[in-house]
Length: 283
Ligand SMILES: NC(=O)c1ccc[n+]([C@@H]2O[C@H](COP(=O)([O-])OP(=O)(O)OC[C@H]3O[C@@H](n4cnc5c(N)ncnc54)[C@H](OP(=O)(O)O)[C@@H]3O)[C@@H](O)[C@H]2O)c1
Image 1 (cartoon, rainbow, N blue to C red):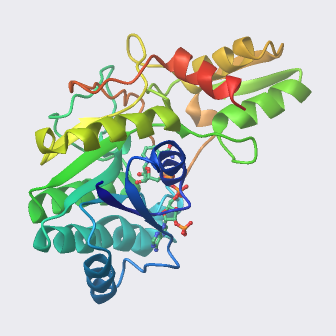
Image 2 (cartoon, protein in one colour; image 1 turned 30 degrees about the vertical axis):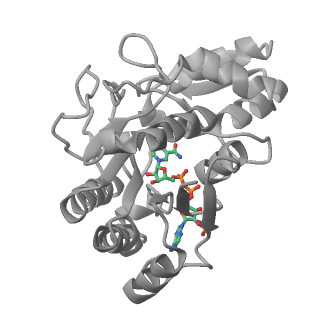
């Protein structure tokens, strides 16, 4: 049985992956209090003690707006330097290293989607740190695999995510404005977990590659507005959804207007509407 070390234990992917696959792998999941990945010696000591076959890194600094100013140092420390620590230790010990990245490594200003080999050009500091993260991981460890995903949502009404927020707001308001000028693929975290399981089962095929794992959409992807409309429709919520532009909800960090990820690998995730239905059926 493969031994898999997961960092960022409290994160949704770690949680879902463990729930689905704890009988198939020997899983060791660590939170930030179990392992300080800033500390190279500690990472080295912990990894050599655990001796995993694979590390899945779910730890990240994720405050996209704060990364522009007050969180800039943490953003680069966590999202670039610490990942380098993990990649370096796994390279020395010949361990496979899977790390989660984002569609925000792309600029996304034109009406197009992004394939795995396309040139990156981050639009904000968070995306820049993740871009460096990818480069460092691939440079340091030939067994690194970059899994880019986008707009994740997860089980449970207690967790703050877009789907849960729309259900709550849509049930109590008569109308609400929703951004309709950013296009992407949403991703049910369960589907991402299953894709990572498929990846682990044939890991030698995917080493030193970038993979795009998100639920599939048609055309250029969908917007928050499209996603909300589908959430309302699948929940029979009647609320007036009013499309608006992102300029009506300004944020410190710019977001790509078009960041749909195209997946050319043989591991495919299902359509976004099916992923959403499964999520809602299990709430
Ligand atoms: N959410 C999305 O829609 C989305 C989209 C695309 C890509 N991603 C990628 O998915 C990953 C997670 O994103 P998220 O926004 O969903 O994450 P999140 O909920 O903010 O979770 C981040 C995880 O990182 C861990 N972490 C933070 N600082 C740490 C530290 N100093 N040492 C060890 N662990 C630390 C946290 O662990 P503790 O709880 O123990 O502190 C937490 O489990 C990122 O790589 C992100 O780029 C997310």
